[in-house]
Image 1 (tube, rainbow, N blue to C red):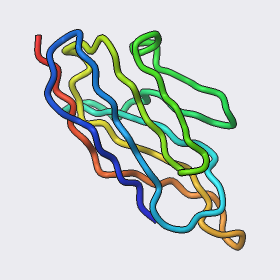
Image 2: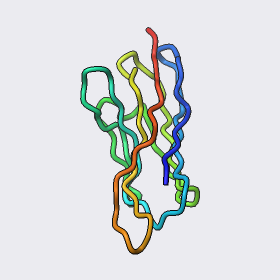
Image 3: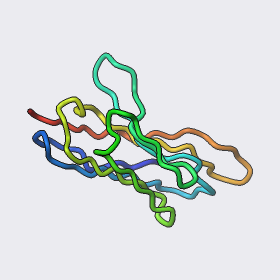
Image 4: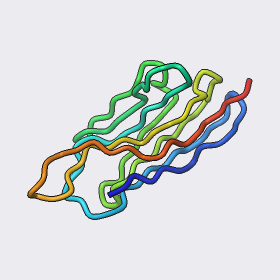
Length: 119
């Protein structure tokens, strides 16, 4: 099982980007799926996640970012609008999921995708 993320890039302040992350491989269920971000020298921080239909956002991105989950495709998208230079970071997809009925939930991370916002 892998998380495959895409969609990063270089944009100017005020512009938009959409990040996508899909689960590849066979799974039973997903408990949580969302996005974190990290800048050099800082800890990875939560951006947004979906759990049982409920959406949670970091205060710094609320009203600018929107996370959507496609349960049929086991994927999430993060629509990022009105981007700011402070949003520059490597964004990581995360999921807490269960591969089989014999196993239990485990955390998975996608490869990071870089977002750079110029002023």
